[in-house]
Length: 212
Image: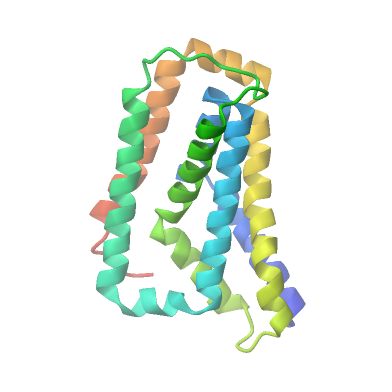
């Protein structure tokens, strides 16, 4: 397989992975519909930066380290699961709080920064994403790729991750979804919190299963 074909296959696989429902999707949708469009876009940007990080560690071969050092992989799974449960608890506790929704033009920069950090940390908290990236790169990237592959892949990965979640943010921050959200905020937040908590608990309780 040529380097160009390999990169095309890698990007297609990453797009499919990004489109699969998970904590990242829930977080972007929730921030977009419940906070502001800018918050949703900031969360999407955090997801993109997280994807660049994972592509970087895959390129330098840290996938092999995770695959061979069992305690490190288990520790990352537990830590990631605990973080997701923590995020879920915050969403659950805030489910009944009154919410003033803006159209994104007056979004608080501090809140936007928090949304970016939340997106980045949610992306980085799942070691399975690191394994997914690493396995794809290991399977599809040539053993000795040319230099341009190292330079081109990170920005392309960013475009895939941030681009998909930007679409999610724009869709969920439109008027009708947000009006509906305000009517059923408590239940939407609690469903989102439950989904994120379930994913976190799954990471924790399957940490001993080290098969990649």
